[in-house]
Amino acid sequence: MWASLLAQLIPALVMVVAPSVVEGVKKIAPNIPKVLLPVLSVALGAVSSVVGDYSVAVGGALGAAGIGVREIVDQVGKLFSDE
Image 1 (cartoon, rainbow, N blue to C red):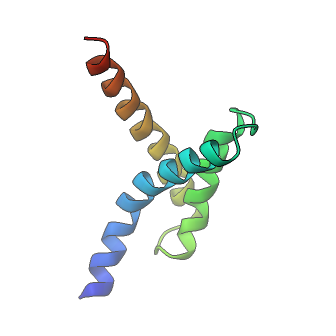
Image 2 (image 1 turned 180 degrees about the horizontal axis):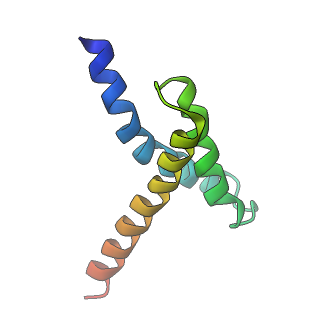
């Protein structure tokens, strides 16, 4: 039971955790070129396929979707901070 639940949660967690890790890396090592940060998110998603029951391509797509989630959060934050 728990294994199937975890298998269903991993893709959602990847979309949240990958951008969070990238943000942490950006704060720890600010000299990393900004071009590499989205690539890092996709790579983290691909690596997560080891834990999840899906292909590397799906993991990469989940990492890329995480970039979209981060951008939505950033834009909503900017929308409310401009008031």
